[in-house]
Image 1: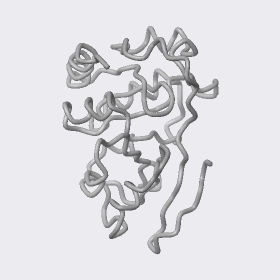
Image 2: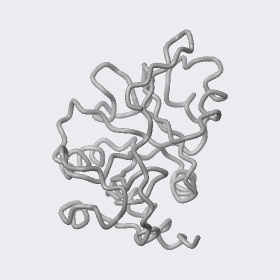
Image 3: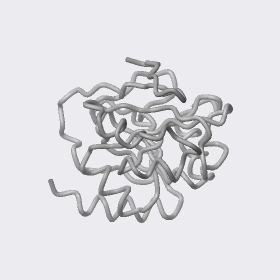
Length: 189
């Protein structure tokens, strides 16, 4: 797994407010620094995505959730660490994100990634990253690099080379909401 060059290039681009096209623990994604409002705007523009459709944020560690969500479930770290498949959790009361990264109701969708490349990238950047499927809004989600639309490839500021040759089809993450009582509602199986 040699992705050091990709990591360096991604961090440089992200620190400058740019966008990346990269493999995640699920599908190929478009990403940026989740705390940079202009960079988040670039993702919406590149995807031609309506602003009311919110984006997913990736974190490297479950404990980082407490930095970005007001009053999460007391045992949220254990809950997040117990997931056996990629799961994105919608949390109420996002903290610290620009308005365009947060849903109109104040919620934020967060996934703690298990992917070695994504984990290393977030840790090196020291900031959460956006992870939105690398497609024009309304078009099919690209499970592998060869399925990514040319407009997305040419529109990203940096395209990760690592895993471009993968042929394993991965599904988008499960999407859930956890209420104050700890009950889980499945929004996307």
